[in-house]
Amino acid sequence: MPTVDDILEQVSEFGRFQKQAFLTLCLLSAAFAPIYVGIVFLAFTPDHRCLSPGVAELSRRCGWSLAEELNYTVPGPGAMGEAFPRQCRGYEVDWNRSALSCVDPLAGLATNRSHLPLGPCRHGWVYDTHGSSIVTEFNLVCDDSWKVDLFQSCVNLGFFLGSLGVGYIADRFGRKLCLLATSLISAVLGVLTAVAQDYPSLLLFRLLQGLVSKGSWTSGYVLITEFVGLGYRRTVAILYQMAFTVGLLLLSGVAYAIPHWRWLQLAISLPAFLSLLCYWCVPESPRWLLSQKRNTQVIKIMDHIAQKNGKSPLADLKKLSLEEDVTEKLSPSFADLFRTPHLRKYTFILMYLWFTSSVLYQGLIMHVGATGGNLYLDFFYSALVEFPAAFIILATTDRCGLIRPLAASNLVAGAACFVMIFLSRDLHWLNITVACVGRMGITIVFQMVCLVNAELYPTFIRNLGVMVCSSLCDLGGIITPFLVFRLMEVWQGLPLILFAVLGLAAGGMTLLLPETERVTLPETIEDVENLGRIAKPKENMIYLQIQTSERTGT
Image 1 (spheres, rainbow, N blue to C red):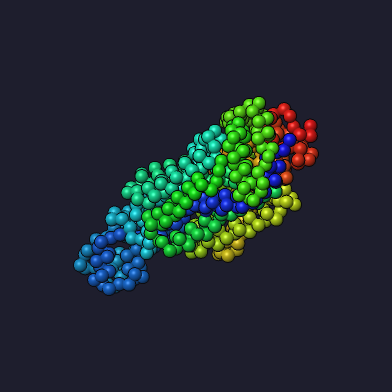
Image 2: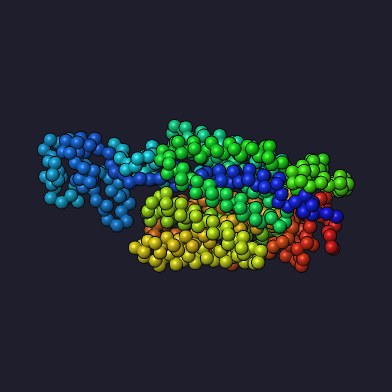
């Protein structure tokens, strides 16, 4: 009895049809990058100081340069570890006094400036930037700086809540319908974010976009892996995630060209509408249709794939699909993820791996960003590191499988964080280099855990399994902004200790998962239970008909 992979071998595992579908879905992957990390540019915090109308008038009267104005009127940095830096306090002085001189105007008020009273910025702030961000527009600094963390946490909260529902929708109503609906809603919400007039509206649109945007990306990931044959499945999955990296590089360039956050948000949201091309270029997954007993559509899609790839139509498709009518339609259930001992173990381990990858990935970006440097170049260079990560995966998985490289990458990321604890802050380039090694390691983990996740669940709960397990990634994203910056207030190396422990533990837990190298995608829960006991990869086969008791070679 031929399998889905056998049929794809006959019509071409990665022919013209699959290439067209892959390139279309890559647009979706690239468009997801600004949603995930666009906060770096949308909410950048420039250097700032208290706005004082009296200071501005005195500066004009005296003809001060900017450096002189800062030297005469802005407090010093204060004591180490002080909660309110110079950006958040100003001298409690009446700058409109006519007696103030133009040379060191505060000298006549106190012999030592440190004796002058300081107070909060009552008239707002002055920002040293030629552009704008949500920080500068809504004054999210000083006592309100936590609102920037909340802005990013809202999208991750949306990812988390959406993971619980969108995955079920994709498995219950189809990958394509889920992909189209979530892509359209995400694009519209992106435009609404660009025109939001207040901070609560920003949070609402950000949360709603998070609810659907990750589901759209994941549906595209599952869809493309189910369209190609066994020999190309991992390659297209990794390249699909590389499209996300391309989106990161493009984001840094667009952000540099458009320094105003509303226009930037609009520029990164409008291309998302191109994902609607999937309606014409990408059909529904034949594997999902088979699990839902929709045989007629399977025949049409397989014939269409054969024609697009220049192959002859398969004469035995109708006969095979008629035999499938006697089988039972399978519906996804959240309980299926924990139904058997092996599924329970895989689900809990994958949840932890997703959580760790998110905390380390976003945490390293934030930690490196807090050390200063050029915002656009630092982001660009760190994104470039993700390309070698993809090539390392492609070069090692065929020889070593998935599990050992995944475990090693977790260990590298954890070890890099551990080394950074002992590096001096003065060794800036060494810190950046080690951080990039850790970033590359955790990028490999991010790309591989998604692939492993998809290969450890049967078709009828595959999308649900990926979404539920990856929801722990979103939970990590919710707490990471608060976690990093609050721990850095205690000690700068404290977040790195946490990252090291998480990464090293993840490396050990990865080795408890079964290897799926050259094993066809499992179709039933029984197939998953037998993954660790299969001696030959081709013994685990995906039938054109859904069966739970009859297996080839047994």
